[in-house]
Length: 334
Image 1 (cartoon, one colour):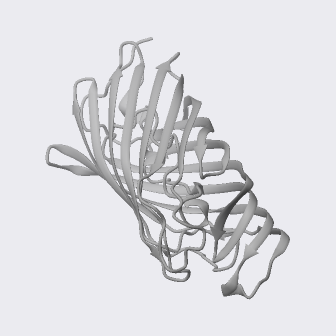
Image 2 (cartoon, one colour):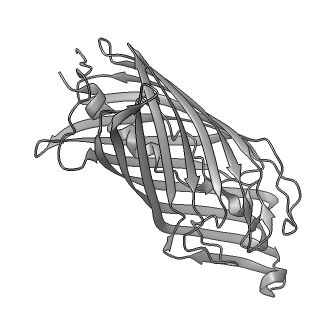
């Protein structure tokens, strides 16, 4: 018997704020605030009041072949390969007071890591004074833009739902002309809604989330990225009180074209569907519940984007020991 809302929701808390940037042609630099499969199991549940911490490790590998172009840091490139190894450190506070009958949470996430970008051809880089060249490569340790997320969630028996918004603040270590960047150097907002149907008797979880990503303009390159719709779905089953497994799907579709005076690759719009699986394992360490979750998704049905594989490993736990439950905890029977 476990306190399902307190323990299993920790992985969710690690994801509502740990928003990763992943290659996506159709936005400048091939970077999107949305990550396919980001909001998976228990996406609609906000846990009891307390402080929480999570670390999300992202591993992404993808390529954009066939001579298709991408624009990064003011340079136009082709035959691009991308590898990202990055951490997203997230702290979250669920308020002890309710608003509109729901629980409120706010969190902040800081990305850091090493993006490795290589291009077979540099087509043009007028801002950097470079001519046509081959075999451009860049890899360095960088800080990304911090992300702030607010969320409000409600419960009705087995049904849970939430509304939220995230903002990526252009305060990271962006360098114009560098291929290796985690920072967007533009304001990015994301509005989302999520819902979960969770049966504590059977351990079955059906979750989904929809959202709209809104992009601003990069003032250094005069490039304005388009906005995008995204959707996540997850089906998860608890096999034991510690272990659960599931399947995931994510969909991203850019609904407006890139534009701006600095755009030299045309009105691209990206789209992708990603499918994969997840596994979650809950343990208790020194009296503190710890949730670990592994997600792996493969990008398929890709248009105007690199195609690759996403890996996301999350470790999450309450700060200062177990948070007190706001109400009688949900209990699962196995």
